[in-house]
Length: 170
Image 1 (spheres, rainbow, N blue to C red):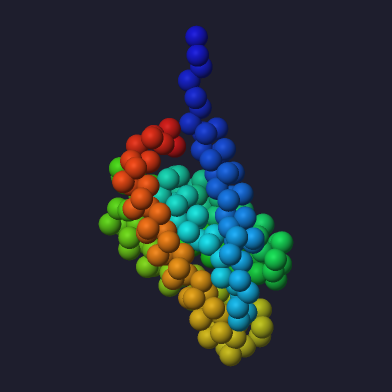
Image 2: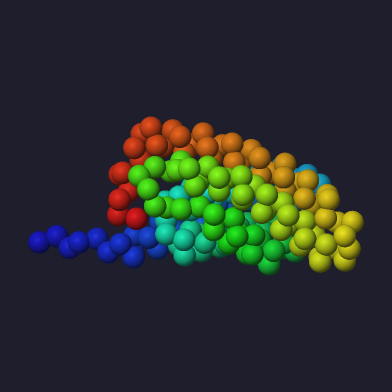
């Protein structure tokens, strides 16, 4: 007799895989330093995790993946990254039959604002002054826009392939 798969174990494994993918997509794949930060595609993976996994798992994947990437590339930003990656997951939902629900479309926009504002405020603290806000805000905004666009394109393709239906165990 075959044992039933444990959904908690599956969610933990998928969360760990997402954390690894987020780390790689942030630290190595299309990692382009600009301004006080760098362009990367890790947030696209965080958005995808947030659409597939329940919030605690998606938050853990985003925080761990983002923090590991910063430990490898920009350790000064680890603590702000832990906070920001948690916050950008919150607007998304994993409920619904599709990745691109109405809520998730709005979440892309909200996360695209939360991240630049949060990193701008973090820069003010880290670099001791309000003058650090604008460069960090703009750098993160430049990074957030392509992540949002690519996520929407990827999610639309995955929805057409009915990928979410195939992952009902999550």
